[in-house]
Length: 314
Image (cartoon, rainbow, N blue to C red; front, side, top):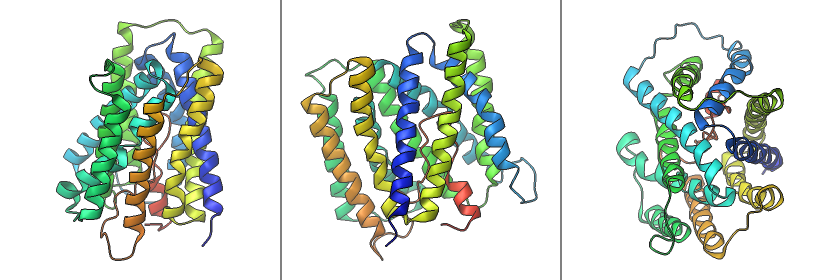
């Protein structure tokens, strides 16, 4: 078993965690709309360079327009909610909630993909959702818009991933990637007029760094999945909680409390079990969690799965 991809993945998720800490730093001064608009603007040349390698003939009209529209809406909502949640909540708490995405993907795979989920994975989903309640502590602590944003981010991010599994083999990579980027550019450009603030050169450079970090993390994630099996690479995403704890304490004076540690541990354990079940031969036909190879909670990181499909890593 080749574990080289695990090291590439650990680096990729360290880059993504740095990206998210930078969002939190810039979010003190700027709205999520403004950050997403400019980070999308800076991401266009980087992603376009990769799309230029797509040799498939065709046009930009989607084969499945309604699924493409729904995924575009989900991707835009995902980015907006992620940027807001990282700005107002402790980093570790946001990650703990976002780690519930595999659980939601497992549930949504039933109606969308026709996946059959057995009692073992249902039990893992139930336990994982209990972990979410432990993190949120409804009744014991006041739930804020930030918590709602993080939960929404997990849900729409999972839906966007499921849609890619549904139609990705028939849609061109350029369609899957450019439509959400154009939507972010147009929608966030209009919304940022509500609370626009001029950006000094240093902060503009920070937005440029967001684009570069998101792009770099995506590239190394592709390398990771090319080097090792998905069952080796996928669990590495949970390393982000370590970086979140470190960055939160070092730069933002955050401390991780016991309920967040306990809830995150429960969610991570259930997610790892779902990955284990999907990687077991004959257990799952669609393996929706294992095949969700992209880290979609950012407007600046591109979808990894389409590029892996082109290299026949299905």
